[in-house]
Image (cartoon, rainbow, N blue to C red; front, side, top):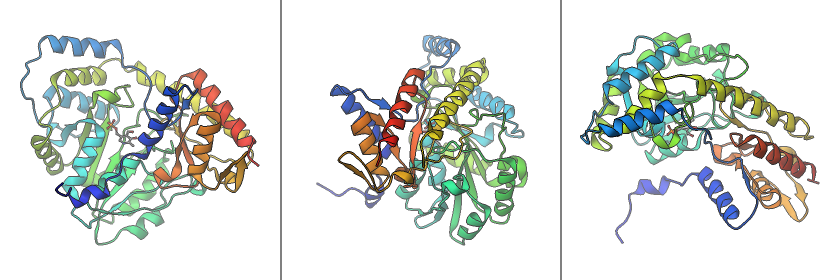
Length: 398
Ligand SMILES: Cc1ncc(COP(=O)(O)O)c(C=O)c1O
């Protein structure tokens, strides 16, 4: 068989999907499995979204659409940007994609030459590193452990920026930790960034899921002078319960937005008309569902943290956004559960799945092997039972 491109050797299947797959197989084999592994929001969009999709289907033109995105969708995204306090953008600054993941791929493709450096704080979301690697970038990973609330410190950023640095990926609120940066923390990072001419890929897709009345600080607000090198990234997946509809957005300086449009024109061409109609309805319709889900996730976060507090030795920086928690599980290393010895995060997750039927993702998948990720979007009863099993597992370690 002829060879695949060398870059394919750098592409790895998602570790998160592998855990989800294993849990699915065990379930199919009759095991009682609770999955805390995959980051799906687990609620459906409102009726108005389906109504818009159906109405669009009735008059679907079947024609090719705009590479940038139809005007109605771009305008709806502008409304969303303004709701978030980002003004001064116009259609020329925007581009849509098949989910935020596709926009990330395109934005990195537009910027990174082989060997260019990209800074990605760990714990990171897996596709951020995988896409950069596929593209041949050299990924610099500052380690941001539980002792610093999994947050990038200005000195770490400063130390890593060099002549070959092209981009920082900044994800706030964070997948996988659920951490949210305060305004002072954002401002301090901005002070470093204004001194270095690099792109900032601001992955903002959890911006509607922030708890405790914390508010959402942003580099573009603390340092508006960064505007000509910030790419704002958003998605309908988590906010509106629409991961399978595949709608992502970028707002960026015109040349970057145009580069994304050019890339779209050479692969996807356009998003389907029906999907765009549903997306417009989600962005411009009633916003009560995201608001309600945010309250629900905050309550679930409280339940997760209350369980963790009862487990001796386990610590977890308190998440204030998204729907993830990332406990530090080092207390378990070197212990056993019956015959099963736990030396690292992968052993922990395998044993937890084996003994209690609870699936979590090992932290090493996110560049932080001292922890694991729990995604707590499942049904309330499942969450309570899964947490009970998690606690019982931890307390049985000796
Ligand atoms: C931080 C982050 N960015 C981007 C994405 C991709 O979102 P989408 O479904 O829009 O491709 C995800 C999905 O899990 C994510 O967690």
